[in-house]
Length: 324
Ligand SMILES: Cc1ncc(COP(=O)(O)O)c(C=O)c1O
Image 1 (cartoon, protein in one colour):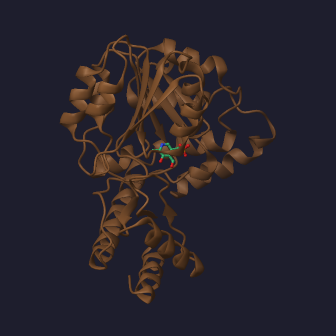
Image 2: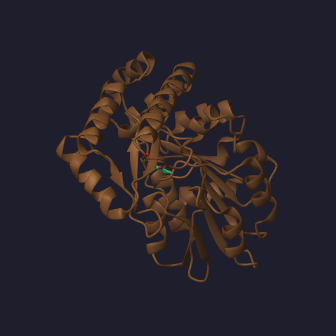
């Protein structure tokens, strides 16, 4: 965490005894200025997770279809399970990318659908190509609400992928783009994210059901300060990417390979779900935690977060002792 962000948190502490501004007021102003968008098209949240939850509550109705990538971030299944809309999970491609053509085809022609995509996707790490995104923006049925989960925005930028907001600015709504301070800005524990909408009406709908004080004083101060530390953030992202690629090479040498990642984690194929579970348990016994993927198509994979060289060395030593 950059020193200036730490200092901003400490400076905000005396104000922690009072209520924060409603809806992250100062953060909205900073975001609007930085993105050159009206404040009315932005909402801040208790992580982007809260904003996805609000979007589900506001926009999923009985009679609509909710099209989502499977496997995806756990919130999507929870949005679907809330039960109002018809749940339409669409399997990822074999490369771990959202199958945008299949997802578009699954949306109802009458515009009654809500589609969420994540590129790069969690838990596979893989991103759609700019051509695939362009096609999606041109062909989704009119009226379909498109939610783009851009949680790994800064990592996909580091991978040379285009800013998803650029084509969206020229795309008719309804659409919503969610981002977070949890990943590249490393503020996950403070819980702060934001969403940008095609029009203020969508933001008004979200604000209508938002918890009043959803962005707390420390989170807001940290996020505003973080926006002024973009250079530090970028160099941290590049360092993480370098470490990710080092780890990818070492895991590959052990036969553990997976989709190309544009995130801060790697998904690797262990051959079959039983072996994946065995490796996971063995690593847990050595104090190294990796995640399984609970999905019929991706159960043979493990999701490994990029950490420090020391953590990776422990991981590789653990794998070496298992003779994977
Ligand atoms: C794709 C994706 N979207 C959203 C989130 C939620 O992030 P947060 O609520 O911390 O902003 C995550 C967290 O892991 C994620 O991977």
